[in-house]
Length: 153
Image 1 (cartoon, helix red, strand yellow):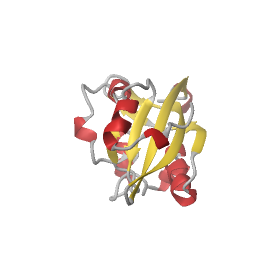
Image 2 (cartoon, rainbow, N blue to C red; image 1 turned 90 degrees about the horizontal axis):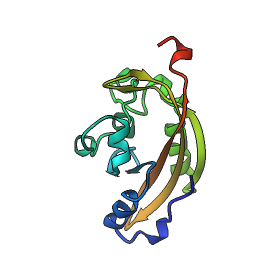
Image 3 (cartoon, rainbow, N blue to C red; image 1 turned 180 degrees about the vertical axis):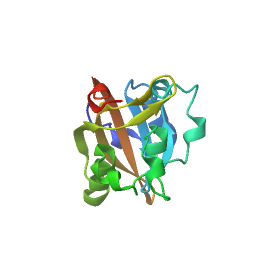
Image 4 (cartoon, rainbow, N blue to C red; image 1 turned 90 degrees about the vertical axis):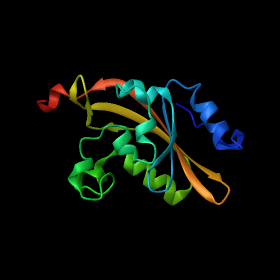
């Protein structure tokens, strides 16, 4: 995984075109972790026909995190959220305004045909300024490692 070439994105359309060429999951998030753009790889992993229903939802909802119901405010507020590799990388990228590369960790996601799965995901997050707003480009790769059976589920 490498950092997306954000200097080549003049608009959201440019980012979407780039996302559509990548086989990894790509998410464009705002400061609150809400999804503004994504690609077909996310829909494929989550076994959805498309991503239209997850726009403006949090990345945890988009990725099917089983812990989004642990706190009334949802994703990024539960007690286990501070252990989430995606959440920690996102917070660090916002704080430093610098790219975060190849952070790896286990997440718990729910899939319609498989129930709860605990894949090892690797993420790279790149801040991107669009006008006065800052966005985060989150690239997620499923490493193929899975800890589902090791946890008893």
